[in-house]
Amino acid sequence: MTEDWTEKYRPKTVKGVVGNPKAASDLLEWAKDWSSGAPKKKAAVLMGPPGVGKTTLALALASEMGWGLVEMNASDQRTGGAIRSVALKGSLSNTFSDAGDYLDTKTGGMKLIVLDEADNLFGNADRGGIPAISELIKETKQPVLLIVNDFYDLSKKSSAVKNDTLQIKFQKPSASTMAKTLRAIAESEGVKTDDLVLRSIAENAGGDMRAAVRDLQSVAAGKSVLNVNDVGNLSERTARKDMYDLMYAVFRKGDPVAARKASFDIEEEPGFTLLWVEENLPYEYTDTGDLIRGCERLSRADIYLGRVHRRQYYGFWSYAMDMMTAGISDARRTSPTNRARFRFPTYLMKMSRSKSVRNMKDSISGKLGGYLHTSKARIASDVLPSLRVTLKNDPGLRASMLRDVGLEEEELAFLLDTGVDSPMVKLAKKDAEPPKAPVKASRETAEEKKAEKPKPAAGQKSLFQF
Image (cartoon, rainbow, N blue to C red; front, side, top):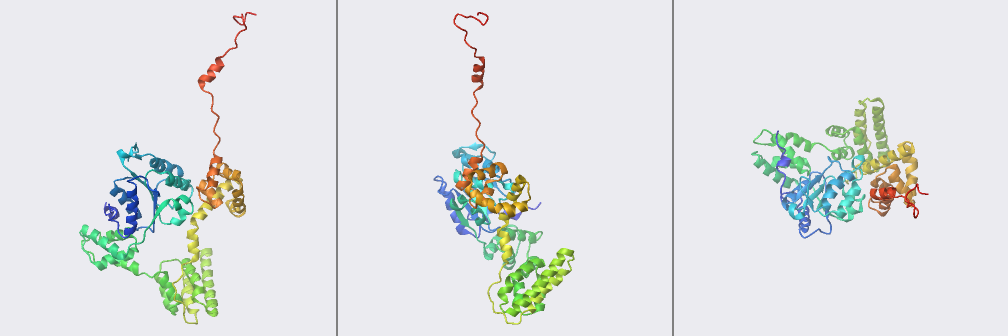
C-alpha cells in the first residue's frame, strides 16, 4: 500500500512547519520556559481552521524538545474519567513511559499532553470532558496543548480555558508558500513539474496544506512528469462557480438567462440557494416595486420546494431554481446600486453556532423527561425556562440535578449560564456526593467486646455458686 505523503513528509522540527512562523516561534518559546520549571500558563491552545498545521506543529515540538507524547483525539473516548485517567493522572506525576510506567522526570524526561479537537466535546460520548480539561489546565505538572478550530465555543464553557492558557492563532498559509513545499515533495519523489501546476494545486486547496499534499499525491500517482493537463480536474474544481458568482449573476448582471445558466455551475441543493437569495434580496433590491416582485417570485420558488418535500417529486426543483435565479433577475426594473460583498445566510450561521447548545439542551431535556415521566418537547418548552431561574436561587436543587436526575457538570453549568469551574457548580458537585459512611470498629475490637463476660461477684467462683 502506498504511504500517505502527509505522514511521510510531516515536518519533524518546529521550523519545518510552513505558513505560521510567529505561531511556531511563540510555541517554541513557551516550551523552552518549561526547562526552568513550569511557566505561569502551563497549557497552550492552538487555534485555527483545519489543515493549517496545528497538529503537525504539536508533534514537531515534542520531537524537537525530546519530549514524550500522549495524544487524545476525537477517535478516543474523552469522558471526564478517561481524561483524568490518561492526561490528568500523567500530568500530576513526574512523568510516565510509553508503556504506561510512571518515572521520575530525570529518568523519563517531559511528556507533552495533546488534546486534539478539544472543542468537539459534546453528548454522552464525552460527558464530563470539560470539567476534566479545566482541572488538567490548573493542576498539570507537564506541558499541555489543546488544539481547537473554534476557541470561542470552548472558552465560554470554562474560565480556565479562557484565562489560564496561552492562546496561539494560526492563519491559512499563502498559495506561494504552499507551492514551495509541494515542489520540495515532488522533487523528493522524483516527479518533474512546473510552478503553474504546483500553484494550481495550492490555490485549489484553499489554504489547507494537508489537502494540497494529498491532491499532489493523487495526480502524481504513476507519473514522473506532471503538466497542466494532469491537474485539469483540480483546475476545474477551482474555476467552478461558487455562491458569490451566482448571486452576482442573479442580482447585478441584469441577464435572466445568464443567471439561470450560472445555477448549473454550482453543486448545491435549491434549498441552500434559496437561503442565499432570501438573505441578499432586501439589500440588493432597495426599490419597493423590485422588492415586491422579487419576494413574490421567491415565494413561488419556496412553494415548489414545499411540493418536493410533500410529494417527493423532484421535478419541481428545476421550477424552483428558475424562479429564484431567472425570475429574481427579471424582477428588477431599476439599475443595481449596491457594490458591497454578498452576505452569507444568517440562518446558517446561527444554526452552526447553536449546534452545541441544541445538543446540550436535547441531552438535558431527555434526562429530565425520563425523571419526570414526560416528553423532551414538554421539558424544553415548559420546564427549562423556569428551572433556570429556580436553580440560581436553590443550592439544594442544584445538587439534586447532579445526584438524582443524573446531569453532568457542564449540563448544570449550561442551565446556570456559567462555567463548569464556577463556585455554584463546584458547590453543587460537593453537595451531591454521597455522605461518607461512619468508620466501623475494627474486627479485633468487636471480637474483644463480644468475648467480654461479666465479672463474678466477690467470693463466687462460678455461676453455680450462689
